[in-house]
Length: 261
Image (cartoon, rainbow, N blue to C red; front, side, top):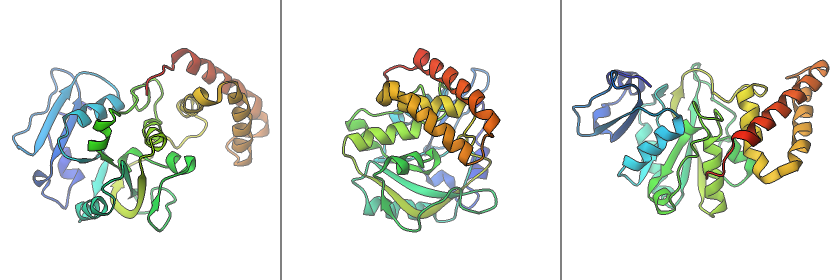
């Protein structure tokens, strides 16, 4: 957001000549703060709209390659990451989504990963997907007219969960998804979805489940309260206030959620 030049690419690709990559940059900004590109391989779209999913949908629309890697600007790509990408495409070219691994600032695993390639099939596996790990089969997405739900993601009504919704739609359509045991980049800072008791996390978690569970959402909320208490995220004294907070979040969801795919 609000970039005025391409210097951030030097930090993202310190070991590469990024001019050789096909890059699409969606810069959500103001008319007075635009990016321009003098490189034929780097396409810049200065958007005056807000919302991470809107930005990604705009990038998908303008992408002309079969596959597209989501590249957040707080990533640092490893040497030879593009070789790992191409190897995965060659092996799983019919998958709608290929998911890789990241490290954190201390060069440790960004999350708990399995040590082997595996197909993404379960709800839990879908919930573990982060957007910066995602390689999208754009050819398939465009054939099915699929995109990110603009109600979800940073600067949207619900600040996370856009990856899980898209992956869930792919699963419903019977399109295969694959997790790859290969690290491609280092992620700077914390994930936006790491606080399980924040308003944003609770609203998103409820919004993801309410359309299917309906009134059974109350049972899920009780189950989640027990989970938070068992994991010592909340104390016994905080259980009832947390339940009241979740009820408020549910009211928000019922008021703001639409039927957008």
